[in-house]
Image (cartoon, rainbow, N blue to C red; front, side, top):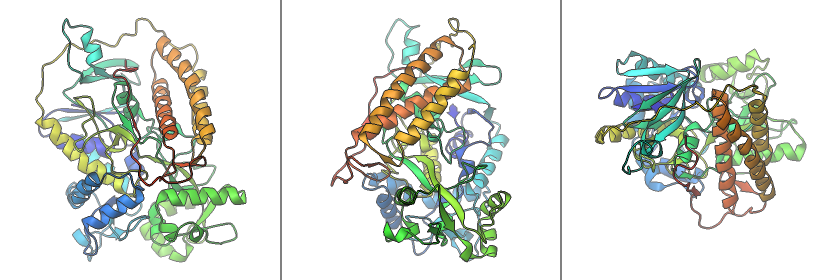
Length: 530
């Protein structure tokens, strides 16, 4: 088995497979560099006496603005308590509370009716990731390959060239690039799991790590899989605004515990946008901040938590307190300058609740996938939960499949390419694409801007495809190729939605339709693979 991605989704699948079969996990940068490790808030667990499955499903649906698949939301909510218990069994050091369910302290975040977020202070993702990564390192059946990147899927199209008979469409493995040696290896696999995260780096400003370049989404699309709801890109309302720290997230839980959003004169403004004020879903809060910034000509707004007290902030938000203090901001005495930034890709590769994609042998789990859970906007802390629940069901489905007959896999052919004479083309196109997406495909959109973006993306694609065809691959080139695919998917999806809903707001279509459906893009199988 080959798992691409060493975050929570990938490690969950690996740990559930490894007692039965050997597993290779690829991480294209350091093993510790995954979006999971950056998650501050926590993971949903329907655990409290004042909570229920129905309440969690209802909150998920409300946040998802009418596009959440109820069966999916219920399936995952029903397994939320077991998911948290499994992490506890793995040794994850959640913040304790002797009076809390499972002995855990539960916090509350925007969009949730009650406290149901299990957390490890304000660095939950890192606590989870460190523990699961240690377990994977210790397992004899798991091979962790650092600085290895999936280049493309090996599908029936590749295998067909070497056989005299037709074969059914499926995934047979991947081509993988050893980034340091620049050697491409052919990895045969009974199943390939894409757990590569989202596509946040397609935008100039994001809370995502550098690994979030939409690799799994782009590879699955090129192999002919359906992709859905890519227009719904979640902007986290509160990213720290500071010249030395452009991607540091200020967790939703800080507002959940009572933080106030304010203008420079100290006026709270959320009441003018939503009765839930700072606890409104992320899309509403992000648009409200964007509106106030544009209305008043501001570079940022303020998140004020000083009234919570220094002792409380140090106990519950030690990471944020320390990071801000290192930048000269004492959050116990000063408001925090914040702006919205791209945070989560709500769409992705269409899968069922076992992670199965349209292509047999290919699975997708976590932010790479689209299951219908997040709809038009993700409810806070549902992302880690989805990784754990569907990571387990994915592993179960893989183990239940027949191994199938092995097929001869062609080696990667680079006989017709040479080393690139200069890298400036990649750097320039990378910068242009991300700025283009930020300016034209941001929080508020227009049809004219989207059409202009699509035109420029087509021109960029031509330059990138020409470069890809003539020079040996590098990580930067592969990431840029994947990002331009994801950028096109986002823009095409946005152009198809003639309404404003959730994370997609169009000035040309400001109304929300009474009935709406997911945006599903269908590719010609094997469109640009290999």
